[in-house]
Length: 176
Image (tube, rainbow, N blue to C red; front, side):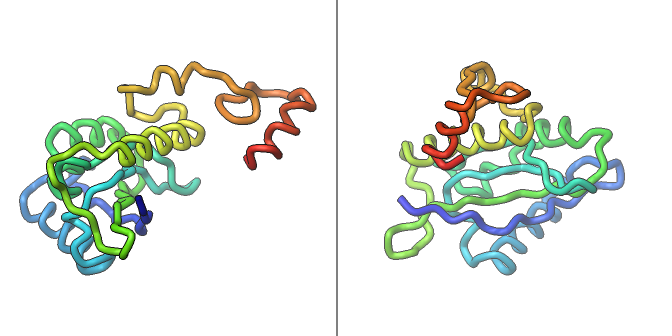
C-alpha cells in the first residue's frame, strides 16, 4: 500500500470561465499528466484533489477516488465537471488537479482491476478530513456528516479560543 502525491496539473478553463471539457482539452490534459508528471499516471488508481490556486495560495474544494477506473476515466467525468464548475463559478483562480497514485511495493503504478481497494477508500476519508480542516466549504457531501459535526479539541473541528491545557498535551501526543 504505497501512495505518492504528484504535483498538481492545471485544468484549462474555457472563455466563459468553466472547465474546458471538450475532447481535445481533456486529451491534452492527460497527455500533460503522462509527459510532464509521470508516464502512465493517467491510467493509475488512487485519490485526487480538485483545488483552486488564487492570491492566498491553493485551497482544496473536492476529494475523490479512482479505484475501479483510472484517473483519466474518473476525475473529469460529466458528473465531476458539474461539481467543479459549481465550485469555480464566479471565482478567480486556476483550477488544479492533484493525483495521489497507488504503487506496488516495487514502485510500479497500480492500474484498475475492477475491484474495490479499502486502502484507497480509507485514504479518501483521511484526505477529506484534512481538506475540511483547510476548507469548511469542501464540496464533498457523501460521508462527510460525521467529519463535519464531530468535535475533538486539538484534532478535529477544534473550537475557537484558548483551549484547555489538556488539549495542548493531546496535540503534542498525537503530533498535530
